[in-house]
Image 1 (cartoon, rainbow, N blue to C red):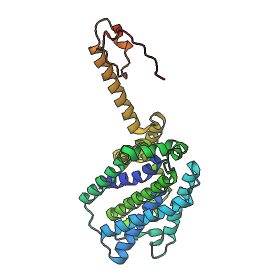
Image 2 (image 1 turned 30 degrees about the vertical axis):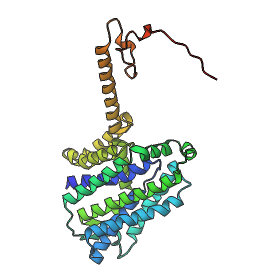
Image 3 (image 1 turned 180 degrees about the horizontal axis):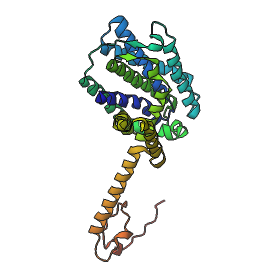
Image 4 (image 1 turned 45 degrees about the vertical axis):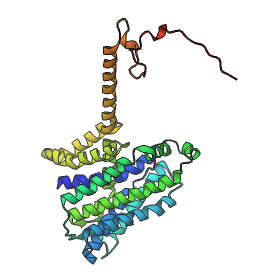
Length: 316
């Protein structure tokens, strides 16, 4: 069960991390999670819809709602945009509570008895992670990075920043809806408490601890916070305190998240190894410390300074 929960949490975390990487400070993935979950439950329990079809329709509905939301919120950014998307999440929760027979009211919907195997979850999660990872590289990845870091420069380069923002909302909605549908199929139930404000806090915590800049951070954060409550179960009522201390410590001392720290360590190790290679290859009489490890000039090019210098004049 924990393995299945980890995969669902990874997809859900990506629904928050992806728009942040696009430069869109949005938590609408939480509301989309509820939309996908309730759509799946309603289609299965009321209309005997096949589970994979129900999850697909819930994903499409959540993505479709993301598009007009992008249009409505296109003038907002930063904290104002974040507050607007949190309001959307809470609105979905309120609609679920007051949905009457359709949503099951405050008790939610139960009895979503379907056959979703671990293999289904593995395949879906692998496809989603692969697609998100591909979006971080190549020409598309560079466009996203420029649009996030400098929208004005992006516009000058011909990059359509509003279009990128709309894509971010749609993809976030699709990922959130997919995670919600899978979670409903896995737990056989969905209730308003499953899309409460606590879910927003969990999503932010996963991203902050894992790292915002890459899909790896979302996946690592999902793994940590899916398994951490189980690991800390032995300390009983102090579990919440220790949990909070761990989160606070990571936020203070690891501002780049686990992925950021790992990347820094790898860079330092590569630089140290390159410096060691330069020291080994340096000719006698040359101080290796005077050679920049990041330089493209090989220390074996001794004698190059003894070559005659030919001065040229620019032809007009």
